[in-house]
Image (tube, rainbow, N blue to C red; front, side):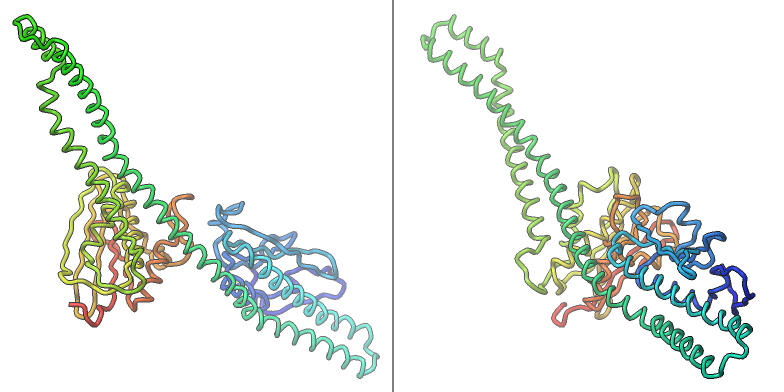
Length: 435
């Protein structure tokens, strides 16, 4: 990266980017581009490689484009000839505005190149036409001054123009949040299907057993009907068939079969009821909710995502209902509990606590997983930021939680536990009539 403060010029020498640009010219544009949505911006000389850059380090980008990112470049020209380019790297979600940012940055840099070249050429012109009239030199200077003024205005307006494009990105982001919510509903539906299939499995099996047993009972009844004469030989034959068909066992097992079938049906009914209650589809606004019950419902609905052998420790202290928007509370619980359940594949310890502190309601969820590195903790609420592998999530779960708590006038705090793992604490104001 070049940090030159002045532009030197030798008459007749071939011009390169390093001769025509300085850090003061370039870096404000690169920084504005990154604030507008680009992840990395480079100004490269065709012969010397990267001269200036901002954003992600070259080491983290490597020789190719990162997964989930797109790149583009625009040529930088000196007297109509390409001498380098400006390159941008941005998330795929910003692909629509990437060309706009690139065009503005590339146009600004080409304007600077042209302006500085003209300024340099005035030195050569002065030496060659020293006898040129003073008025002509003033005209050249006026044109150069106008060109420089136009560049300054362009640089000042660049961020304003990008902000206009950013408004469009925010609309797209809102759509992505909605998709994240729909994805959560889809995962819930898959989990509910799994939970329903288990009880339905033994209901189906028991009904088949009942069918077989009834066939045997019918066979026995037909035998008695055909041989109704009560002679000794018939009774002995009937007893032998009774033992062969194991009717004593069948009669004893019928009660268990019916009980299991009824329990299975009740389990299906309970799951569907919990899902309906947890989604709060009938509630339009804030309502009184028992926070502890909602946490248990969420854990039940996420049972299919709970690693085997997980130990869950509950410490509920919210003895009175709280007032909040039920659907939003469900989103907060699902995202936070799912993150904790995914923190470790085996030996997971999940601690969930609730309570009141003054005029605040608080919820704490802690796990003994791998935790979040301190250098990444400040970025966990950024849209699209995720530490999971590709396909493991789009990085909007904690963003949704943060936005909901902010809307409630609350906050989200994430910390590392001394014994290992992560603790997430959320709190928000109690309603005027809570407690």
